[in-house]
Length: 293
Length: 319
Image (cartoon, rainbow over all chains, first blue to last red; front, top):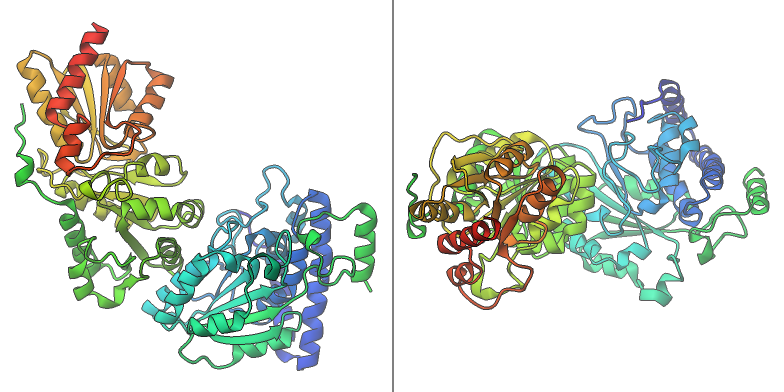
């Protein structure tokens, strides 16, 4: 298990303080700048590993940054605090985005990011619980996160813990039936302490979700399963925060975050092949240039 | 020689399992139960009546069942997940591997009515593959209590162990084994009868039948040693190697497939450390025909008579 990084934790804590004091537009600027830095880091990791899932990393990173840098109640120096908010990345193939986020919160030293997927690295290609702190459960096979999140939220309810549970799902993974089993349980138990955020980039590994095994109308599906549904732009942190902060009723909430696969790099955006394509040296330079503007 | 009670006078381990859980839950508020519409089949009506808020029923959805259990453990609770072993293991295998074992979630998976418990309902409801499947998963302790006392001991141990655990809770009535002061220690097996001619290593419901076989063999002048395994994984390697060396012949007996379960575990161990002629009694890698549990036990030689016949054949083949 990698130790937490005290200096990084204090930097993150400073960011949270600044975010709390910031005006809405300033807050959005702070978060988007942080995720721009994260995108550059992800590019380096994938370049050096020669593997990764850049498209999904870039569609989800604004969501992760918003949660970890402006919303979740966490203490990276005390990662097992019982009342911490829980976050589960169900689309575990986007581990690089999660690792960057956790590292910049100080769960471990960001220097470790360069070991991503190297032999014996603790940064496996999919998040592995017990290797670094801040990973609540190992993920990778799709359709696992929501049932686990339902269990956490149920356990919090039983123990009268105030914690909130967040899970990020890929849209393609909603083709796994387990999500719908868990969606029923969440509404049966009225888990208003549970939020599922769907990274709706409309692309899966090989093609569009709608031409593969269509999900639309996704909002109606979740509504009919007893969830409160919000549709937002997943690259606008304020929209995400507004949906999360709306006072809960008695339903679990589903935030459909419309996103762009490969967001931030023009030649990657909305193209299925960037699901797990590794940029060439030239593409990497071009991508870095776009992200450094 | 120990005399065992007949099957007719035996006990259903599910009863001891459920009573122990209710007793433990009274003093341990962290214990919760998760079921997949399996309250009755897991004998949990009393738990439900006593602790209605601590029984989570996810309906007929075993993958969700195991995932929810992993989440409950993450929240700080000690979940006992109870479902028919056939559905719990086959349907939710990836959740058991990833959410429980790989994530090291302290969840107790309780496979109810395993083996051929469901008799005439057929191979869809039999769970003879569960031990082979689970044994290869890292981090998971695999236990098979043989009688009511042992079921209580294993449940009490699991509630405190704080690690991924599988408990195979049999339905077929079995007599109480000798000795009421037994304790459960992972990786520890017990020698119930000493003998020099052959070692019978038995699991779960097959322990009493193996004791009966040893009695029958004794009348023929053959001294069978009977070892009773509760902890399939980790296995008591030291005891098994020692016994194989001393008796030169080994028979494994289990209400499970002879491929990959106890038979497989012992064969792998002995091939590495003490190659010994073996026979394996259980379901021999086939889908069972239609029949009652007792019919199937007879059909596959999983009775005192069948085990003793296997022992005689092994001794004759190796003398």
